[in-house]
Amino acid sequence: MTDSKVVLITGAAKRIGACIATTFHSKGYRVLIHANKSIEEGTKITEELNQAREKSAAFIQADFNELNKIEGFSENALDYFGRIDALVNNASTFYPTPIKHLKQSDWEKLFNSNVRAAFFLCQALEDELSSRSGSIINIVDAHVGKTLRDHSIYSMAKSALNSMTKSLALELGNSIKVNGVSPGAILWPPNLEEDNSEATEKIKKELLAKIPLQRLGKPEDIANMVYFLAESGNYISGQVIKVDGGRSLV
Ligand SMILES: NC(=O)c1ccc[n+]([C@@H]2O[C@H](COP(=O)([O-])OP(=O)(O)OC[C@H]3O[C@@H](n4cnc5c(N)ncnc54)[C@H](OP(=O)(O)O)[C@@H]3O)[C@@H](O)[C@H]2O)c1
Image (tube, rainbow, N blue to C red):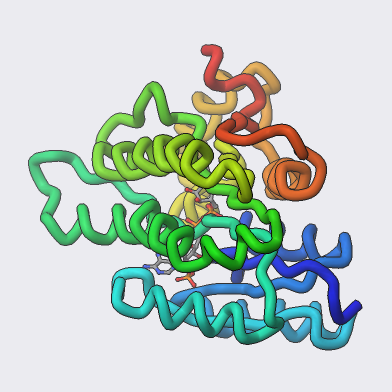
């Protein structure tokens, strides 16, 4: 297994990112799990994967608000296993920014985590991914192309990530496949996840009613598509695939 492929997944200590990590791992990949604040969760999942298969997972911490650290981060990531075959840009920050109240620091937080780090990681790992005929998969959002009320900065950042996917597919296409996956409603944001108040339940119910499949997706639905794009979609590049239960039709 020492020459098995390696995937780097950002924001992978929990939720969808963790599911992407375990999915790749279950198919024989070695996984580099990045997190920022969720160090405990990231360490735990890394230990579990290493118990399942020795030396098959490593944990790396980095705050993507510190741009000067991106190069060091990618060098560290490459040093762990000596190769990287796939990069999954999954890290994200998501919160409303009504125009009356937003601050410039919101712009920085939302752009840094959703697109700037992804872009500079692609740049830093281009040679390595290219030498492996590798893959970049960006996790976008099915709202791109429409938009999300009161979330202008997040929507702009994800639109930039969508556009970046196509630009880099064109620019790097001779050696790296670049694609995106756009989730619909998969997991409620952490602040709503545990909130069973009447008002929140109403919001959740109204949203579910707008999804043709009438239910939330599962993290596995996203992880399986990401894995497909990395491993099987040999002639697919520059595509951003919606995994949203049909939500974008309504
Ligand atoms: N959940 C959904 O239903 C849904 C819907 C549409 C799109 N998406 C997209 O799918 C992806 C996964 O969704 P999710 O809900 O699982 O994501 P999430 O929990 O909102 O975020 C994933 C991780 O991003 C990391 N992150 C945030 N800011 C960072 C920073 N400054 N530096 C480094 N890492 C940072 C966080 O790591 P730490 O916890 O370690 O700080 C966080 O755990 C995201 O790109 C999201 O936009 C999700």
